[in-house]
Image: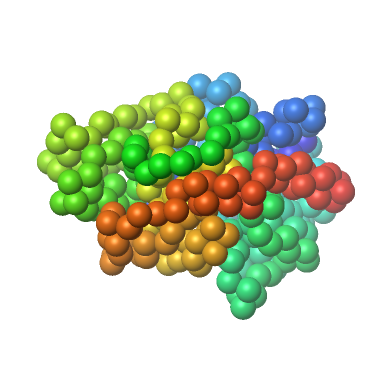
Length: 316
């Protein structure tokens, strides 16, 4: 049994949840049982219920209770997987006290030092010291949505634009991007996620040149209709690039800055800076869409889940 522990909220974002869902799909394909543990969040719980996945809510903000050990013994968990960004040492100690494998994703917290495996798929700063007994770096360890394979295609022009700033868009960057597009006389499709809380501000900006969409059954299918995506610096631009969709990346958080720069270096995206100071030159540039599309598909593959599960299974 695998325990998958996720933190997702308007403040934290929904990227950890969606990445974990891809991992769970890989576990299911291998016939490996799992149980999801997540903080109380209505949007996340609704998604898990709709997918009929086994889960329960847990007090992730508590560093003193031994809830981890109780759950590990209750479910017979052999490997605990944290996708929370910053796990603390107390949490990691509770898990390791049960003598099971601890796996973390892109973990910068104090608990990472006890991880048997720290999968740092979004670590592009080579000078950054990441803790863990074994650290796997780079996008080849991203558990991407396998559905992408259906929609891979080469783009040749820069006509249809889609904006997707994540499941929560904590800082309302979608509104800023809509302002920039409107000022440049560009329309777009705007996709908002299940935890988006800036609809009033957005509705005050968009006009008939924009199309607003929410609660999409498949983001990858929707992306297949566009030539350029404006996204945050999480998992979304990697999934888009893997399908041949070039991206403009805007960092939601400081740690997404090296991600945006790294994606630009790989060739499938341009980095427009941190959301506090967006470089809007991309709106007037004639981007090399065909080249970006080709490089995105070449640089980002869909075998990350296989590589990750091979590594985790080797631990248990």
